Length: 280
Ligand SMILES: C[S@@+](CC[C@H](N)C(=O)[O-])C[C@H]1O[C@@H](n2cnc3c(N)ncnc32)[C@H](O)[C@@H]1O
Image (cartoon, rainbow, N blue to C red; front, top):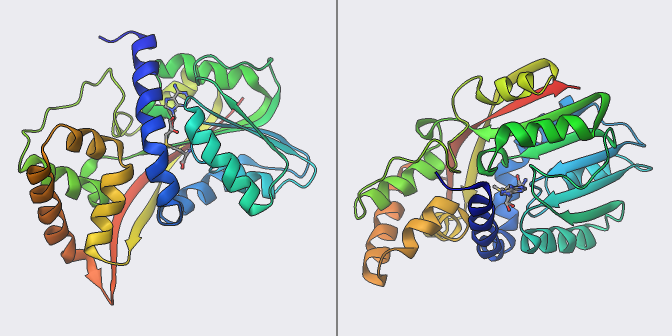
């Protein structure tokens, strides 16, 4: 089993490399993930003057949207990869959002005092943490009593054709290797109740989880493949292992398969995420 330091180093390098793709396809990715951010915000009980912590913020969401909802409040955006936070800072400038700060740190070792924040969010970060129980204990520690934690994770691949389709195309050329349940991967937290149990073990109460649908929309099958092959971590990692000709065959296969989701000049591929909320 890799050590926590190994996991952090590998994740930092992976996401530093993915930051360019996330910035390039920002509009497409943010459109896809917006319903999840909205569902999380609804349960966070945000108030005008709140002090909010966004974990694994990546390019800034849902932290930046939360910042726009609290005129006298402040949001701290944190992530392991400084390159992702650099994109978040640029997005904040573009959107005229000034009540934020960024801090590069790992979810399982937060550089904040106890009971500093009124609320904490972590959209699609959990599955990458080296120690998810330790990270959850950290979120509970920095929350004030009564404060809310809300996270989201992907449910099983079958419910997420937007990424499963690309992985199936990759499997036509590279034999799939079952993911190690103890190492980070996109569907590591997919089992119902998995993250809820972590919340409960960290002493949170009123824990609840619910599923929220998403849709990845692109302008063409070819654009679907460009978007996916430039920002989805397992796809990017798999494509790095093959030569140009193989990469091209995989792309052609994915483009052909995704035509099934083409309608009225757009490609809309569905997916499903799970949100989890708890109170300190
Ligand atoms: C899928 S992105 C999610 C970004 C953003 N929250 C969103 O939903 O658009 C996952 C993020 O988790 C971050 N991450 C991975 N391991 C982490 C850790 N140990 N602590 C904090 N962030 C981590 C990555 O750097 C990456 O930016």
